[in-house]
Amino acid sequence: MNFAAQFLDSRTKKNDNPRETSEDYDPFWQSDEERSAGSKQGSPCCEGPCQKDGPISSHTLHRSASIAPERLKDFGEEEYLNGDVKSWEMKIVGLPKRLLGDAAESQKPAEPRPTRAQNPPAFIRFEDISAAAFKIQCGVQKTPCTYSRLSKQYGVELFLKKEHLHYTCSVKERGVLYLLTSLRQDQQKKGVIVASDSNFSMAVAHHASELRIPVFVIMAANVPPSRPKTCREYGAMVISYGSTPRDSQSHAQRLARENGYLYIEEEDSATYLAGLGTMGLEMYEQVPKLDAVILPAGGHCGLLAGTAAALKHLNPRITVIGVEPEDCPLLQQSLKLGYPIKELHSTANRKLYGDLVGPPFGNNAFLLAKKLVDKVITVREEDMLVSMLRFQEYERATIDPEGAIGLAAILAGKLPELQGKRVAIAVCSASMELPLLRQCVDRALALDGRVSKFAVQLGEWPGDTAKLLDLLAREGVRLLDISHEKQFTSSSVFNVQVSCVVETRDRQQTTQLRNVLTERYTTLCWHER
Image 1 (tube, helix red, strand yellow):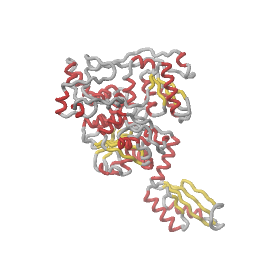
Image 2 (cartoon, helix red, strand yellow):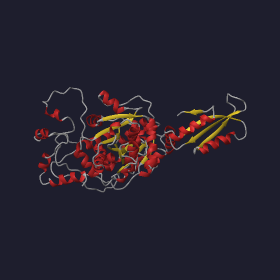
Image 3 (cartoon, helix red, strand yellow):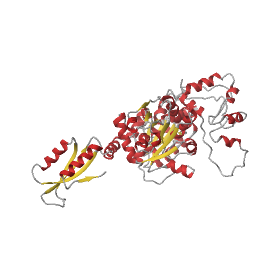
Image 4 (cartoon, rainbow, N blue to C red):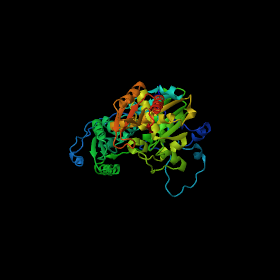
């Protein structure tokens, strides 16, 4: 029985006495003493309308989702969504006792608060994650977490949680689906609007269409053509507006105000984080005796925070590690300063890194990461590219940098303490444009020492070039490109410079080829990567 089923079964058995169910709630971070002390106290914190009686229940209502034509005057002639609206209503058995935070702080006497506004603590409990797992189980598949052949190469028992196998190739489907099903019925009927070309927007487009919720996606005009096409195929109405993401967001907010749509963006609300945290439940169930988990951090660390909340409740001894790009260490710098950084001046390639350097994380995700994450490290761009290459060779999977960053930490030798241990890596995304993917593969082969370029000077006599090609054939090297250049050589007028790009099996064969060429040609010029 999985964790969601256990949670539902335990709540169902106590339906006869709702008061007793409310008193039996036990925050997962409390000690035994704190449980006894906290059992007499209540908490008024609850989001949304609450009912005191009745178990958690959900049902589906089918209503017309027709949209008046005059409301679409800003959207051109694209077809809009009509159909049934699936909506959910939830009854809460009781109010939660405590929210996530230091248990000791609740036992201290109340002190006067400063007059300036303070940010609230992180709103997430293990029961929230369990409820999310039960609610989204029919809409999001349970992805495999399998043993990898890369384990023998790096001396770590690696288990890959293949979240890239979701319909939109992203783990963010978990949080998005739980977020959409938690909307009020009237808001589901009106529709939602989102402005970006990220994995979050793709997930919103897909699941809103599946739930018969009208969905509109605003994208900048300069995004790759495949992104708007994919969103239209999911069932969303896509509108190109502006030349920057800020222009698209402003336009989306204006349309939301004028037409009554709900403008949503990737945030760190309790609902979204709980949905993302369901991956941690599956990891714990699929990999027995788990020692550590490696997750991407970066611009939005909601997956890291939600998964850490689930795993630390199930087994506090599991090490949770976050990894982010060396060019944009948002979380690492925020932890050093003690508050979330909203913007970090860096030279990070946003086209390559995608959501890793995307919108900054909020206070809730930061507080959860600060409290529950054991370690945050950074990796170079070169390590991520080689990690993507390893996935293609050993796992036959095309992964983007966000999905490959966990393995990059192992590949770069940043985690020697994990040698011989059982480690799960979240492969959370696989959405990369084909032209960029080709560039990454070519660059990764050069970084891995398997594609090399060299130049030698040959006499302008018949057979000299043929002898060079014969040498490459004897060494078992594949010739990718060759060029002759005579006009710009600085040596004799009877010499010609020949440049070759070759592919080898591994670094050992590359070294062997370089030694042979050095013995044969005194004018060898080897181009380092």
